[in-house]
Image 1 (cartoon, rainbow, N blue to C red):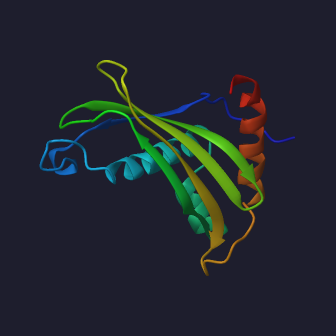
Image 2 (image 1 turned 90 degrees about the horizontal axis):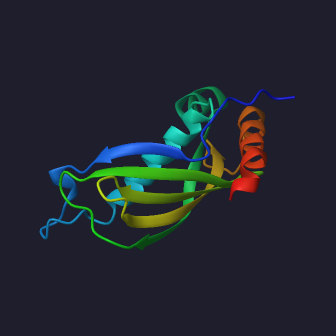
Image 3 (image 1 turned 120 degrees about the horizontal axis):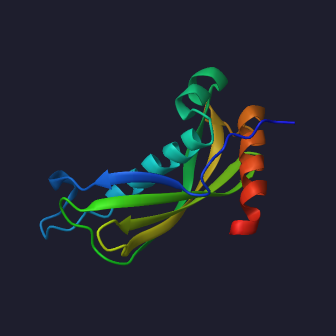
Amino acid sequence: MTEVVAEKRVGEARIRVRYAETDQMGVVYHSNYLIWFEVGRVELIRNMGLDYKRMEVEEGCGIAVVEVHVRYRAPARYDDELMVETRLMAARGAVIKFRYKVLRIADGALLCEGETVHVVVGKNMKKMCLPPKYAERFAAYLASHASHE
């Protein structure tokens, strides 16, 4: 049986909006949310006791984004402190799905929500299954959090 590291149900990553991330109207430019999704995803994986960089180096694979859905609800602005909440929604074979919420910490406002779908690929960019160590940990996470979703 695989040891499951104690983990939060939701990965959390704090972000402070930098001036360079805003557009001429003083609003965060839309593509920055995708970068923040990545920050949240890597933190969630770390919270699960795994290391994405190590997976790339030791297992010779990565998780390529193949689909993104984003819904913008309210603007973030320069110097806002944000919380990126990330959940693992599915992991089966070579496909992994994450869900995100970006909240402004000051008032709890939901600014953005979205999902990403990934395919595990080798260095040759060919699809491959998630390495066993990661697949087992992801499955344990999903099983332990199924009743909370």
